Amino acid sequence: MDRVKLKRSGQVLMPSLFTMGNMACGYYSLLASSRGDFASAATSILAGIVFDMLDGRVARLVRGESTFGIEFDSLADFATFGVAPAYMMYAFTLKDYGAWGVPLSFSFALAGGLRLARFNAVAHAGTGSKSHFQGLPIPAGAGFLASFVLVYDILENRPSGSLGPIMSKVDILPWAAPFVVVGLALLMVSSIPYGAFKQVKLLGRKNLPLLAAVLAVAGLVYFYPQNAIFVIFLLYVVSGLTGITGRPKKTPDHHPEPKDPAVPEPKDPAAPGPV
Image (cartoon, rainbow, N blue to C red):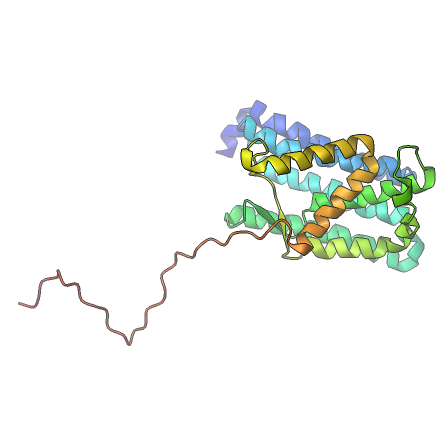
């Protein structure tokens, strides 16, 4: 089936263009981190999240889903959301911790790779939940680190639109970096359920409060982009720990119970008797 889809290159190419955009954002983030431009590195990671959100939706829209696209997407995710944030945090502050900086930053990349491998294995087996992720999704972990760096950029530059009274307490951010990196790594390889929000219909009557919340968040992002993005990722990380997004529904087990050989099976009353 995949060979047929590869021949129909238009259907596969369109979502792959967004995946390439995702990977390009990760590559540029690495370049920006290497020259000390951490705001651009963090912004590139956030842009990669947008591309990652679009490629799957475009693939389903044009019916261009394929094994090639899934594997390509995983490689792009590991580069943009695993390696790029790990290196950004190392160059940003973890390098100041001497020999400990390398394993601290590597722990995030390693956990991201394990998280993606587990996600692919569960997806191929068809046993995953459609309403929840198992463990913190790697784009969410990368997005939190990116917004973490952007908030520190606010601390240094203090743009007029920033939330000054709230942001006055972020001087501890560089000191908290090792704990944040390791904590996110552990959450990614954990079994804590996080909401996927894939099947939520915002325009339904039952979801009007959720729609209002989304519009409010969009307004905050418009007026206070860096601050609001950090708060959004923080709330999502905390949501799994607190269970705000609920728990995945357990599907009933349809396997028959093992029979006890010592107990004779009941006879069918309609069965003919011995002749």
